[in-house]
Image (cartoon, rainbow, N blue to C red; front, side):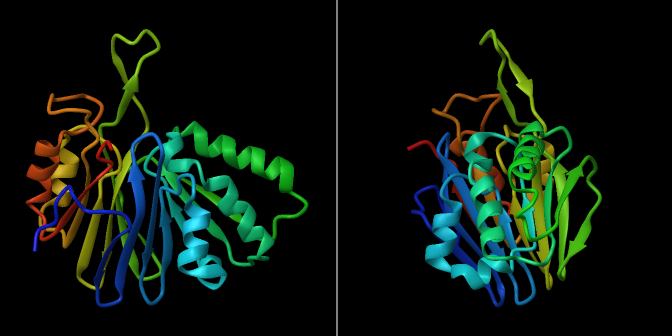
Length: 240
């Protein structure tokens, strides 16, 4: 059955042991996503409130299992919860390493990391590995293949008369013959069209404020057009 833009958060999808929960995806407020398999625990775009949501939903034992964080881009509604999550993992005395994957040139993640290490270098209990991505080469983590792809996310320029491209990625997670395509924030772009097609689940942003085509976000019509090429889809980041 096809999904539509009227889904309420949290949104849950499962195929056997391949599971995703979207706690929220609200423009300018927060995003927060958990992906798990029997062997993997990933967090995607940990915006403000992600620690609260994870603690309430899955608890400390599962939070400690988080091995990888995937960042689509550096806007506050996608990285606002990174600091609290890193701190809590240290409070829990995490021992296993944590990898943070993010688009090359994403200054926000690197700044958060530097500030965090400056404050907590003597207390942090685990190794944090920054993994900037500047290619679309697939890689594997805990039985999940991750295929990053570059998307077209822009922000208004300082003069307000144009827009500027920012480092941004989508991710396709492939596990046991099934796939989840997450586009992050983007205007209509061919890379997302290609990766969403035939995915078991496509998560597509529809962040445009109205039905007018934009170079910042997609309209509901554009997002639906892409979503319908997948077996199932969710429209997220729809303005409230």
